[in-house]
Image 1 (cartoon, rainbow, N blue to C red):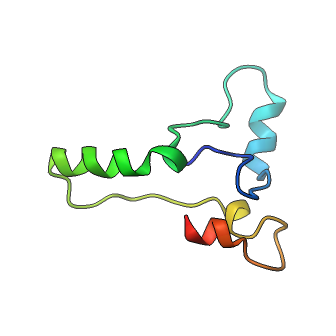
Image 2 (image 1 turned 90 degrees about the vertical axis):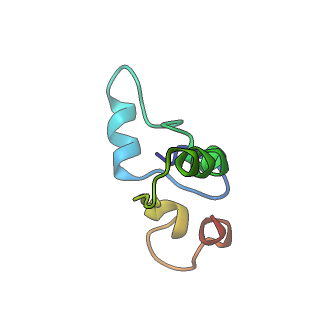
Image 3 (image 1 turned 45 degrees about the vertical axis):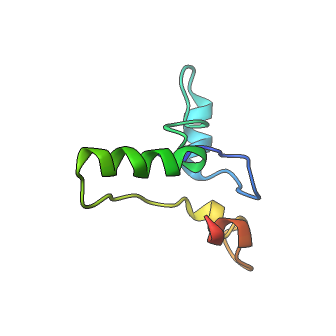
Length: 76
């Protein structure tokens, strides 16, 4: 869902590495929720949904896997 794999301090995850190793589509853009979350929320509201399950990539929150939290990842 998230996409934006190389923006605002996010580093690659094991999944990013795995899909890049294969030929064909990858998750670099995905559904682009990173950029389209406001539109997604509006569409869910219009559809009458009352819940939405999502996840945030750990490398967006803690890019090196240990150490400081990425403020932009936390803001997202």
